[in-house]
Length: 130
Image (cartoon, rainbow, N blue to C red; front, side):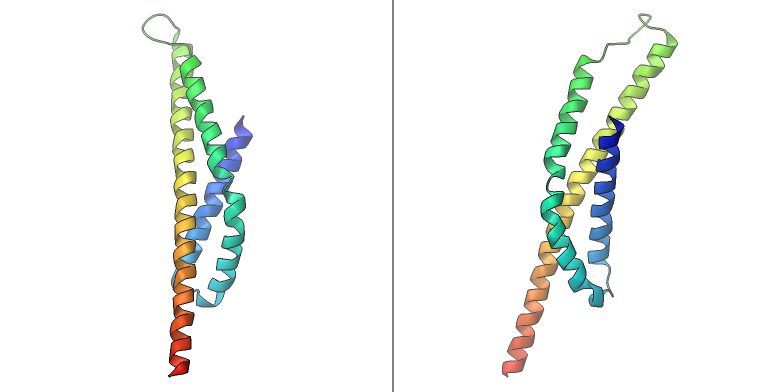
């Protein structure tokens, strides 16, 4: 089950890098290529959303079926395992949230950058007419 978390981590990292590259000032020469690549990758990255929902349901299922370890009903080893399981679930939930937020940011930033480029072209055309 660790492979899906690695895949989700790489997807979130790729989204974060693309958002960073699109928002860094001074990359005007590369911006058109970055916009084209990012727009082509938005649809495949959309698969992150249902994947995150599936993993969130997996975390919920594990939480609901987890044996309770309270008081003297379990040994210190079982108590440590229980605490470690809770920590992993919280970490994975943060990773899901980060992946979803980065996808939304990537979509929004790409949309805004495309709109800015279109407005720049429109201003240039209006200047040429005058």
